[in-house]
Image 1 (tube, one colour):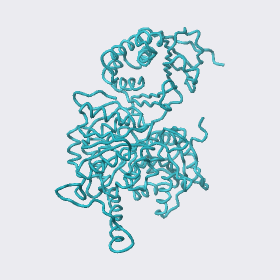
Image 2: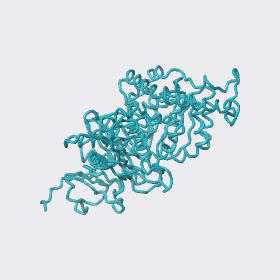
Image 3: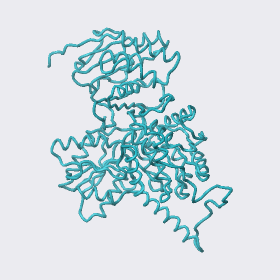
Image 4: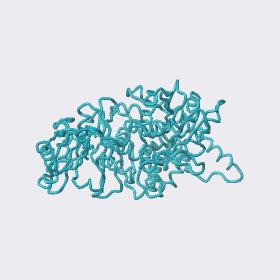
Length: 408
Length: 176
């Protein structure tokens, strides 16, 4: 990783883990708590180095495990701190008890989720299975396509999380292996610009550990009688409202970022060569670059192919997705994980739900690939495009197409 | 480490670069590969490389475990750590240029261990001309995370790799 720069450089050459760490440095959290887990480990090492060098001015807690990591940060956040952590696969599993509690506490934390496939079979490589397994917990989930987008999204995530209409924790997901260790040039925004963009931490106006305004944090709520059921429903509805509010806030924050720093990323859904497309593939995460190259190649061959990329997965951008899908007659959804209950990819399920809101019929094919570090190349996407094009005419396959099944 | 330094050097020369390492469990001695693309235009695909234009093999024994020439393109370049002369290497016909460097022998002199990364970066620069030695030196000074004796050793290794690498143009055999 980079040595301590005397003057902060305008760009660095680094992998996605270090890019996330730079995003943390620029966001000036008050407290960072972390525990290393492959493929997130070098992110922790980068943060520790930055803290040791004085580049990261935050209290850094090396807790004894992920459960404690998030418990420590819950306390810090309730005391008014801006907080950050990062984890992956098995670390996320060990963190689950405080993790599931964080959205209900409405704590605006930011956590990088360096995505990894789940055990078993034993594996240490990337895949979205960990992130997809927690997609209904109430954390906002955004998936990055590039190393630059990781840095930029970590910064934006604090502004989204702390927005008073949202007040929810955010997972910035970046793919284990291809993004966590992929090295590219990354531009660093001006530190003072990020300060002005984010403003002061705003984390505990609604619930606080504060001797000056004592309150019971998270008392027992619910039950079968009295005011409990109505109160519990009110809290749940509030969470749902926060999630729905996040869609607009995510768009605003991305727009503001582009206006201030001169580069930007699609906030919810990116449409690529879609306007005159007949069919499209739907992608998420780092696979998208190779998929775009495959779409370009299909276009060169006269095919009317397009692409829809999901950046924000939770809350699901139903309206943006419906508008995108309405432009085509068939979609092929490429998931980097499995929904065991539905025998398809999880994103495919969301697309099926979206189709139910459209008046017209759109054929949909589920592709599963890139599991456990498997590569998804333009050749894989050429096959996905071809299969999707075939669905225009005939009945699409009912079972998922496993893209790496014949790799050697 | 070598791919990372090369990425830094190429970026400083104004290129767009994507370098992706590939490895299994954390243990020493296992074969590892790293894939690097560079271009004057932005690179979108974050994927491994299956049809390399250039192969840099920094361990003379790794070919026993993997076929390093898998997918090699026509008119490819090989940068090989070896003490053997060209004639004793059984190279596939696609290799049109080979840079050979006794990197292990020199590394044992410089580091007293067979660490060949920076030596082979020098060999790569000499063989291909795709990156300037000065850019690699700057990358090593700025980004290698090395200082004092370790930095000096690696700078020496880089220069030695550049100096001693013998570059051979290989005449194409008649097409079958």
